[in-house]
Image 1: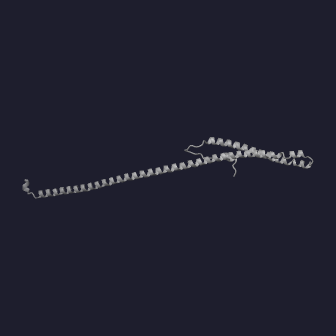
Image 2 (image 1 turned 45 degrees about the vertical axis):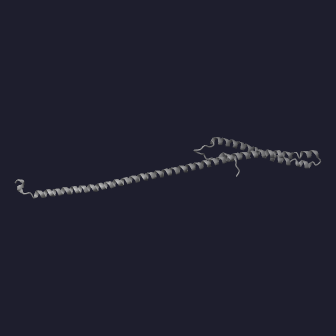
Image 3 (image 1 turned 90 degrees about the horizontal axis):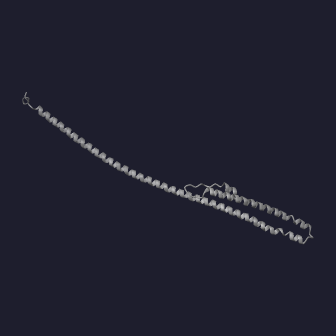
Length: 205
């Protein structure tokens, strides 16, 4: 499909972020200049084509009078071949705008390719940076998770040791309390037995 000035005018480029690149305003102004020159070239090309067509149609007309006047020798011979050399400059002038138009198209295509290549490079760089940042975040999260698990494991070990100490303390305390109470009961039984076997006369009655 041939590229037209309207294609250049309506072409939309992706705006890049977080990265240096061409100034969009300068690119748009330059493309506008290209479109203006391109349209002028196309108009000149069409005008030259019209002139060439008119010239070719005018070239066929003098042939009839030449046939009607066979007695004219030198004037006819000199006038009829005259248009032939003029066709070459017309072809050359037609080729010049075409070459200029091709140069403008090539320049516009090169600018487009540069924008596309730069956009792809920036896209790849952003993706690479995002992947590296994501990997760093995941690694940091895993590190914090390991540290937190180690801390909780240490706290659990400390709490389990404390619970064991409290249970041992409770067991020893109960044992000592039971021994003390049992000793007090034995003392009471011994004191009661001693007071029950003492004679009444021994206490002054």
